[in-house]
Length: 122
Length: 113
Image 1 (cartoon, rainbow over the protein chains, first blue to last red):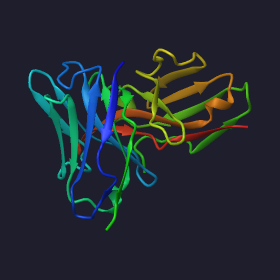
Image 2 (image 1 turned 180 degrees about the vertical axis):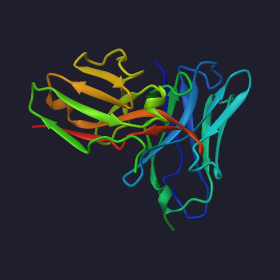
Image 3 (image 1 turned 60 degrees about the horizontal axis):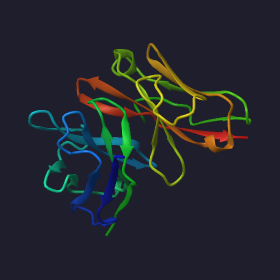
Image 4 (image 1 turned 90 degrees about the vertical axis):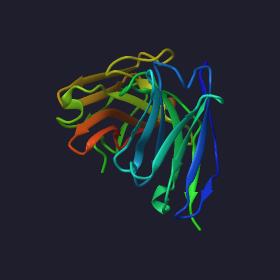
């Protein structure tokens, strides 16, 4: 049974970096058939896909146009997890952040983390 | 403004049938990209309900069904039950000059009367 467990702070100051981690059990971050995603949800922006990391002979990353200049998603094979870094945050980045698995690129998100409410405020 | 358009709300009485539409364009659903549907109960993560237009994951009742035609997709729920009261979201993929992204609908709140 695949599970995703998120961790990270719930409060970040404006202009700082938001950092979250998603630990994987029951699957591998290095899987050749999965992609590991970050998605966020806010009342103003709804559900918004942020990006993904995946391994297909080598590591790949895809990022949403809206955050491409300030996002990094990294896999950590030693801990079987992946992380989100979102730089230069503003109150607009306040949202519930989810990690999720998709089994092929462009496929549905079949497994979700529990969600982390992140507030950007001084 | 979401790339995929859903009605903000729908409602139905127990036992009835409701449908939720998801309207896109030639750069997403109309381009042949698959549509997926999620159910979200308050305070929880979205749960996959329908994948690749019409397929149900194991454990999802056959009261839920999906279809796709042209630039739109639909989710149908028959035999409405009180536990179906939730928010429903469609998801697809969009490819335009500015890039390619996973896209979601704005969500539809289903009220069981």
